[in-house]
Image (cartoon, rainbow, N blue to C red; front, top):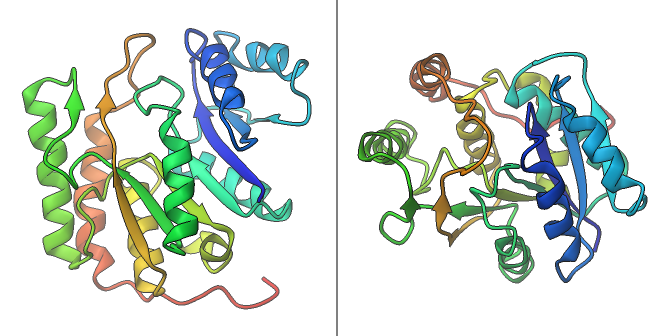
Length: 243
């Protein structure tokens, strides 16, 4: 089965080569698509350097500027669907997600025939390392808020370490995904759930980055808060065939 890991980047020069080498070393022939938003630190050049060693497994999509996490992933989804990948993963570049867990997410997707598998920080307690307590509490209760507001049976609604099946992504109308930042992850999960695809959660340990700079901001939390309130009233339908 064809598998590709989508890694959006902006100024990840400290991490990108190591994460690419780690993912390509895993069993299962994972491929990687890096979606770089014009990083001024040379991230794209570093990707091309490793790509020369793995031309069939490392791919690069360069965009002109910092256009947002959600649009980066949607560009990656379209790229992967056009090339008929069976499973499409999301993962950060900074090792906060353990690349070894990609194998576990893939196995769960196949065994449970899930449209979406979530690498969950909260399905078995709270498994977060090196975050300040204030951020742990905010993240945990954000997922509680989403669960209560939407009734979606997911413990880690804001998780950014996930695996989608081709079938699930092909059913989504990406033009109707409105949130671009933190809320993008919530809206994607909610849409997949409302379309009736099975969702599974696999426990992971999330470790905060040790290199590079976080891209989180208060604005993207605000988008998520108000966006979740609107999700309950959003009409969800499968993408029309041929579109």
